[in-house]
Image (cartoon, rainbow, N blue to C red):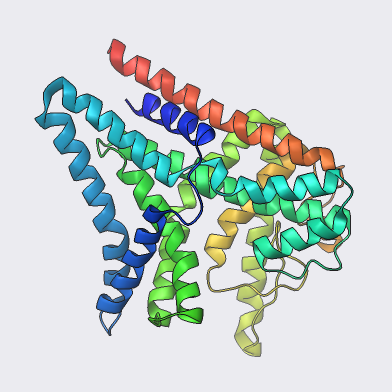
Length: 351
């Protein structure tokens, strides 16, 4: 059932993508605001996060189990339809790909100014001075993280939930965990109610744990679907650089009291400050590093970082062709996990 649920959801999403500002997403945001108003009032920060994430996930499981086991064969079909509906709402390339496509089309037409404006609107950054190569680099980095969070990460947690017999609970759990890290800070800055620092910190910490396994599954999928040895080598270098950062932080923090400034292997620029959600950023950096290796393209590495890691890798500079290559790589990674799921499904049927 899991394989067919994913297949149908992806096909429907490609044929009829979920519109922006739809009523379901509006209801989800209203739910998150309600949770903050009712439970972010001096209680444990984990209570607000748990209610916001776990209650919808448990509800999705209860509906799935009731449909599957209470209505016979017809209930099995309804449970399949429920899986498809939840997956349609929680995963999909079209939920972010219009940004990617618009910037790529502008670059292909030679309209660099429009590409800069679209990138700035998408990520809320100053892109006015970026040369074309840096625009492509940013688009590759932001797009692969978005593809992971909207597709591959959801797929991973859906499979975990399905193997445990929980239906689409994993997909709901993952998407809400990710949405909270973006939406609650936005609410706290621009709207009411105000979200406490404790709840925001808990949301970031929980997200780093939730995304740990999917990030590594995505990186492995990129290695299988792309240049395997280069992707694995980039993964190794990422881990080596992370250990180097941690060692420097431990050596520098005592005695100086100064906040350590480090570079992230992918996505971050030289001198960028390590934030409180460094572990969550590390998951993103791992995905970007795996993409860099799988496509043999230089992403997020400064000259100083490459020298300290020993160099020896002949990376290509980002080019327009890499944008199309990245789309193909992501789709191949999705197909890889779908084929793996199909084999598991057939094996369970034969057993």
